Image (cartoon, rainbow, N blue to C red; front, side):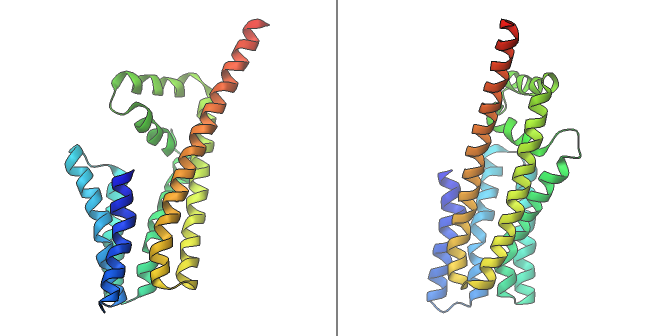
Length: 207
């Protein structure tokens, strides 16, 4: 995650403060800082030669948010444009619960199996064979959706109560903190669920 931390968190803060100190208007300094997250997504596309749906969504919101902010001349809108991305991700998580498989099933599979066909088949088999796995993945997806909607509201609260310089600094720290916390929680939750299933199976065999 180090390249992402550099491009998505550190560089926007550095660029904003440097430009702001040199007298560049706050709105334009915010827009300039947003170039780096977009460049990081483009870098990933070039490296993998593949367009990820989540990356397309983020790039779209970055572009629309920046353009709309510059047209409207609203610093507040520029500060909360990331909230639209966060809220959209949360809503997609919750909306995916109505589909055949929830969003976190696919995101987790990418982390666990990557492009390995055998591991992908194994992961898909977990969904087909174990009802508990299906309910756990739905619960995890619901938690991600709720947490990211709350994060979006907190970002708006920051923009209403803090200076732009403070928001630019605090917002990415919160974003990465929430993401890392959710990844750690998801891993621990799924491992605990697996261990319970193994214990139940052993108890049934012993019986």
